[in-house]
Amino acid sequence: MGEAKRRREAAGAAGDAGFPEYRNHFKRHFPKSAERDIGEGWMRQFAADVDHGTPEQFTPPAGAVAVHVVFGDATLNAGVAPGEIAAAVADWAKLGYARNETKDLIMSALVGNYHMQQQSANAVVCAALWLAYGSERAAEVRHWLAQPDTALTYLIFDSGGRHPTDGRTEFTFRLLLSQRNAFPEP
Image 1 (cartoon, rainbow, N blue to C red):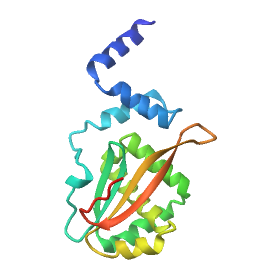
Image 2 (image 1 turned 90 degrees about the vertical axis):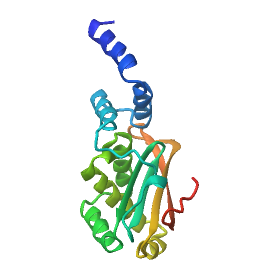
Image 3 (image 1 turned 90 degrees about the horizontal axis):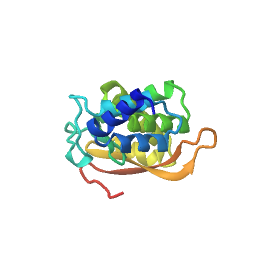
Image 4 (image 1 turned 180 degrees about the vertical axis):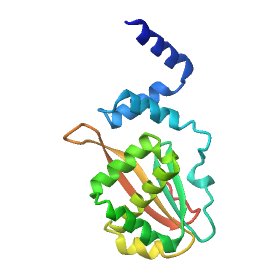
C-alpha cells in the first residue's frame, strides 16, 4: 500500500467517524459514483447553515403545505403556499424530465446531501410536487394541496431491485397526504 493511501485511510478512520458507512451507503445506491462526489456529499452534511430536524420538528409557515421527502436519515422539509404549488410544478415540467429521471435526481440529491443547499432543496421540492401532480392520485393530490395546513410526504424505500444499465438501486416512492403535523407511520 502506498504512503498516501495509508495516510488517507488512517485519517478517514480517525477523523471522520461514520464516513465508511456513508461511503458504503452511497456506493450501494450509486455504484459508479466518484470518490470525490462521495466525499463532497459527506462534507455537505456538516455545513453550518443546515437544519437537521425531522418532519415532526418542522414548522412550516401558517397556511403552508408542508412537503417532506424522506429516505432513511436524509430528510427534506419545506413549506409551500398553496397558491405557489402550480407554479412550482410548472417550473419543474419546463425542464422536461421523465418520472424516472425525476426520481433519480431526487435520490441523487438526498444521498449526496445536495438537498441541504437552498437552491437544490427548492428543486427537490418542485420535483416532488411534480411527481405527485402526475401520479395516479393526481385528482386527490390537487384537492389536498389546494387546502392550507396539509402535508405531502414521500417516504422513499430501497425496492431491492437494480437499474439494468448501471446497477444503481431502484427506489419506491410512497406518497402520503395528511393534515399537517399528522405524520403517518411508514
